[in-house]
Amino acid sequence: MNWKLIFNPFGIYSEKQLFVTGILLTLTGALLGSFLDVTYDGVLDIHQSETDFMTSLKENGINVACIFVTLLIAGKIINRKTRAIDIFNTATISRFPMYIGAVITSSPILTRIGDQILNQRNDIQHLQLKPLDLALLLVISCVLLMITVYYITLLVNGFKTSVNAKKWQHFAGFAVALLIAEIISKILINF
Image (cartoon, rainbow, N blue to C red; front, side, top):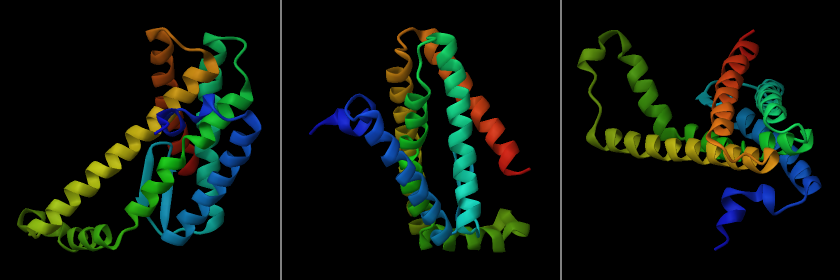
């Protein structure tokens, strides 16, 4: 199996292929969000919430823009030769796992457990979840955590390829840029 294809497609495909694929993925993610009633209300967030295509597209656009701008600034600080197209492709392609997460987040199991918790929110001390529900919640949470790790792995690998990052300071700059992107995206989406 070609692991590079899965974890670092940025070194395999041309910038044009990545650009087109990234745009198609972003549109597909917005469609999924609108059909599944999933909101992308932050760079690192997916939640179940009623939405429409334009709202989902706006949220996705803000998330991609926040990642793009913050990583481009960090990239230019690290390496002046960093190209905007490479960072843009990183921002769009890396969101693919979030769209898989959207499908999982919209599962009827999570909806049922969430409704049960909301119905008993005033008496949370006496909340009774079935052992099977707790086990399913744990498994789904672990899968969503792995999806988030995969998303960040794609971001790191795309950034590393785009910027030629090698030092720990470069990756610290990446982490700061990602946190700033999350904060800005939350502000802009909720504005």
